Image (cartoon, rainbow, N blue to C red; front, side, top):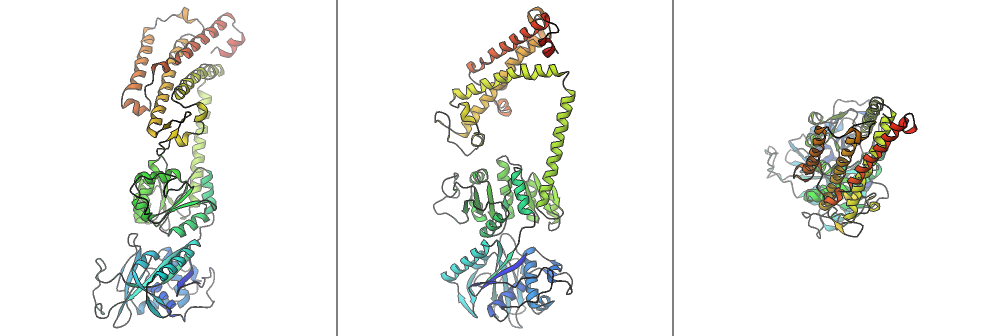
Length: 587
């Protein structure tokens, strides 16, 4: 991550760029500017990052710095401008008295320092929109002015411009504290602040580029081609998040995007919203702000994750990451989630596959995860998926080989069981299935490619072949009845198959039906099938339901067909031994 732009005195300015492999020898363009000096002071002091050891012979970009990525980038920039070792020297002149570290709730970090022998200064950085809300004034060309509508408009324009570059933006402000209320030696309470954290003075913005690692856009594309949906959950501003998502193909470049980033006065967020209406526009992609996510109903969130295939959640908290994981799981998805912080642990545990970062990840996140990326690279997940699918594919192949080599007694048995009797049973099952569907208004040709809409819980007005509207519950009830008819049809045709299997050569008339245990078992299966189809809870567990009796009678002709077919087969076997039917069907 590298500092690329600054905004102060009402203008976006290019930052001096840090050379990746050598020392900086360029011009330091803004040192004479008082607004820049105050912004640089705030950036230098309001930080928890530090160089581990002096490495002045090593290019600045290669020196080891402790801290998170944003602070490291700002630390290196400040060191580049001030000179080798000067950040530490400057901090020694204004040692930290106390601080409130950044957290996802406040979205800011502050610290207090002695500015002189008589006065303290509070410095703060954080999410720009949060910082601006805490400021009543701003510093402009050497003067402190009150925040106005024009300034807020200029701020928003600059913020959106920087965000559209895909840059991560932080806001900076300070407060030169009252010498009478907060003199040197004043005991500042950081747990329950006894000092002002509002009416501060806005100083400017610092923007950093965090380019995707090499191979990540390609890895995302590979995931998508393999049927894996990649969703971005980030603390960045929606504009930045959308720009980066576009760079890595999470959002396609020319895709229409629905943005749910500010409250809509026409919409009640607590109500259950419908895709294609109101703010849930019928597009393929959506960007949702964490504040809007927090007010969404669970059903609305399920509607979002079901209908939008390119999704970005921005300005989210770790708790919301857990909420997002649960939403995707609730609609039948297998979810893998990445995380590196302590607060990510609940989401990592909840996910089907929790993925922690091996380098930046905390011990808590690693313990909660199922998999650890040793190189912190998203592309490695793709490699893991490829290896896992290869193992699974090889397992299926080995099972198929074992079954084909060990189950058949011979080719004729397989042909008779699957290609002849099995084909008649399948025909019987599908006949009763589609007859039941047609009797309720669903013609076979209208069922083709309908599964996605049929299984969508949030579509309650799906039209059948006659234009009748079906709710999700009524569709599923009909589907259970169809499963029930198929099941009952197989039971009935298996009765015929059972009697046909009593003899391989003799006629069933000659063989007789003297096996009373077998005869009783047929009656028992009839009652068992009836019990399964019509008993509450049992049929719910098995996903079947009862149906009209006339539909069940459709299975009888197929049962007679199986019995008649096998009688003719055995007739030819007995009378023409060595003939074609004997050779091809006698097992």
